[in-house]
Image 1 (cartoon, helix red, strand yellow):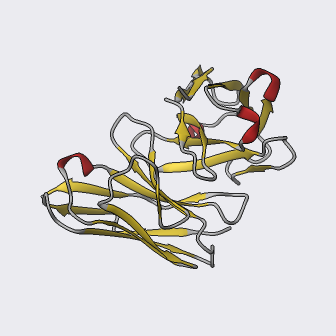
Image 2: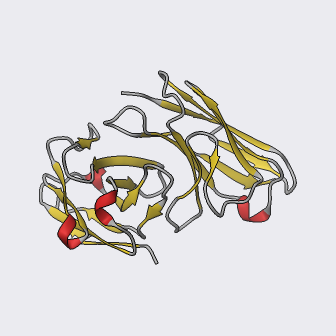
Image 3: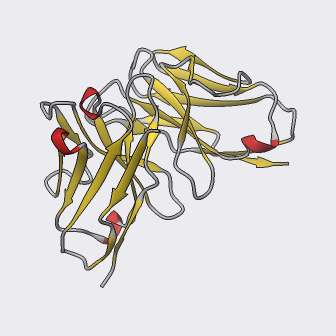
Amino acid sequence: DIQMTQSPSSLSASVGDRVTITCRASQGIRNDLGWYQQKPGKAPKRLIYAASSLQSGVPSRFSGSGSGTEFTLTISSLQPEDFATYYCLQHNSYPPYTFGGGTKVEIK
Amino acid sequence: EVQLVESGGGLVQPGRSLRLSCAASGFTFDDYAMHWVRQAPGKGLEWVSGISWNSGSIGYADSVKGRFTISRDNAKNSLYLQMNSLRAEDMALYYCAILDGDKDYWGQGTLVTVSS
């Protein structure tokens, strides 16, 4: 099974900061990766699909990059509504699909 | 409006069974593979099971293989998860979701509590 290692597990940042979250796959997954945002008490919401494609309706301050085993989610200028937990999900090797462990973005 | 509405959760004793349902509306259900994802209290997301549009391809997480069965009824626009031999570690909020392609649809989840 493919393992997804997400880092950091948490971070503190200020409004306006540039934030980067990384997922590393245990083997190559081409670009079969999505990034999700989850706020407390809510279902996850996908921000990025196919590693770098912006989901419809998602602000352009979110971007994704990478292919193979290394992937990055970048928030170019953190906004108050972006404080949440973020997950990557690989859907290359099935079964199973695999989520990363999550990154909690907190207010500094 | 796209809707995925889960039901069937509740309190169940260890070793017993429960069947979850997910009613879909607002999109062409049989165009999409469907998945179950769960989240234990205070924990991260865990993919549980997936089923292709025609039920021809089915997969399970190792943690539920042999105990859970996913199925769908395209005529009823419904997805199911039969959960047998439930354990304390199966306690979670269970979501049905579309995870593939450019669509991102999730239900609100149904809570499964496993306790004696």
